[in-house]
Length: 116
Image 1 (cartoon, rainbow, N blue to C red):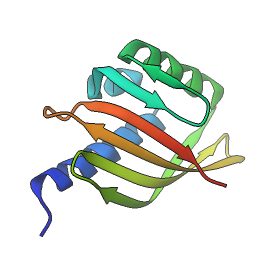
Image 2 (image 1 turned 180 degrees about the horizontal axis):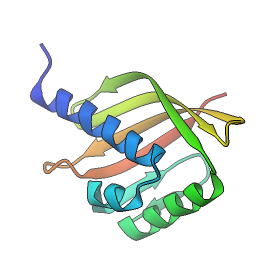
Image 3 (image 1 turned 135 degrees about the horizontal axis):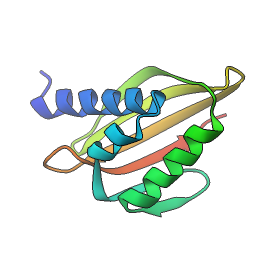
Image 4 (image 1 turned 180 degrees about the vertical axis):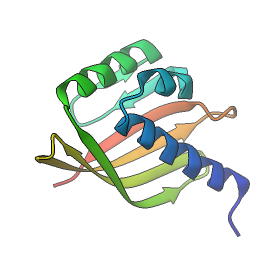
């Protein structure tokens, strides 16, 4: 039987990915904890403002973006998704995003792993 947290984690993960795909910085900002960590294959950033600045840069570089979720996994503190991001209809990135949440369901970390 699924727990309430697992349903919440999956819902919040999918919502974050939808907001990212829509390039909605204002809505994303409301989902992030002030001390959020962003780590990917290029960098590590701490704090809401640096993370949002990186997202804004990513959004500026992508004229279009689609995100397809192929699977979701739940842990005791968050969720991860295997996704394919298509940027500018030509560049395809296979990524695993791991999100953790605090007790008020703010995102405390986003760790991304790029596949081949």
